[in-house]
Image 1: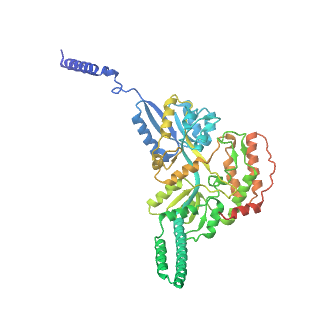
Image 2 (image 1 turned 45 degrees about the horizontal axis):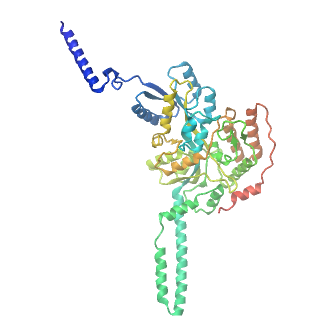
Image 3 (image 1 turned 135 degrees about the vertical axis):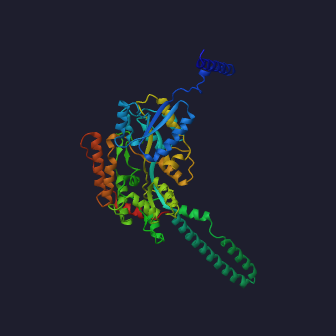
Length: 506
């Protein structure tokens, strides 16, 4: 027998013995142990278009791959141009199509009708467990079905320079203490005069010392916080009153300034009274753009040009944000991205201010506000052959209560339960809860362009009533397929609106 054959025989005998020992001890054949001989993993591909998500998507894919022995997640960054068309083409013609993809909620109807978005597994039950804000649930609901998972969101709210408000608070509290001290001193003098007349000046001296001791404790942080809270505006009227009374530092160029050319920062003016598609934004029978309330709100918007001289031809969001970070503005309307920009400026030593986020104020005591929001959703591809695994991974991402998404991408999760280190982030989540999700209806897809043009026209002085009516007629013509004419509504009383805007806050 050749040496090579002998060696092979010995190896075979050893393997047989080892296999017998393993079987005897575990009751399982060596070749039945799938931990030693794992099956091929199922690959789940998830497409996304925002490169800011890359670090987060890769990190979560690695984590999921480590805890799931049967699935391998593959994140794929693709171009946002013709995104749905690319998904459809890949799903029909290629092998490497996405099982999941991330898309904004306003495109869900188009994706669903194209067969690219399928109803999620037990979606109603999953979303209505108290973990998701109302806007998140509405954003992924279409015709009573849940066709996506809310992953992250964007909305706007009022952001303020906290340092300026705290400095003002110190001045106000100090003035109050000084006034109280003066009153106490006067009372002590009056008391001494009375005591001298009565022959009991010693007792009055003790009383005066006690009053002075109580007033010498100084200003506490609680006093400052309380004063700042009191100064936060509940309405645009409050901001106007603030501007009249504020002793602004030399660095301040404007008390209130925002991008009047972008609908995302303007929509709050009409958001409480304009209905486009109903609660879920999916019903074209529920459209109400032109009404008395929206006309009144636009008149308030137009009148603000008298108080805050903002040139619509010169302004943009980036310049407003930079001026705000530089301390040139006290209040602005901003999206969540401003907090990351502030952190970056501080890290670079280019910002010494502290900032805060507040609920979006109303317009006046009579007119409220609601901001717009857009939710980026995870959608299960209708062509996927691994729907169970795809749904499971989507829920894995939506159950992530760490703040990794914000740390790695600057995005805020569209669910509750995340412990953010910055309370301002939590305020944005609360504002998002009450926001108006962008509608899904294809027929109204150009409404935002129409509104953006209308806001600019109205800011520059064009008639509010006529401008809003034209917007409504254009949209309703698209919805109905026939030329649509609105009945002209009477103008609200300008004097009453002006009085409401300039009224003193309580």
